[in-house]
Image 1 (cartoon, rainbow, N blue to C red):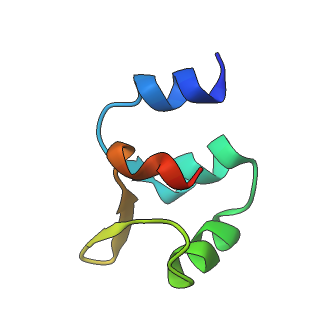
Image 2 (image 1 turned 60 degrees about the vertical axis):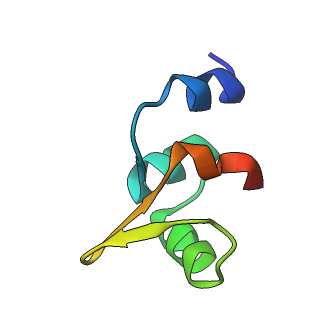
Length: 58
């Protein structure tokens, strides 16, 4: 499955761990990108999620 197909098939919000696997980097890198506001996201308490509709940054 291609990256575009994977993103299109995903239902719901992405977890940090899922994004790190998708992109091929560490969860620490994802947290750093979130802190730098490079990855659009929202927080649910202490959890960070990224909506499938916000993945134009990829």
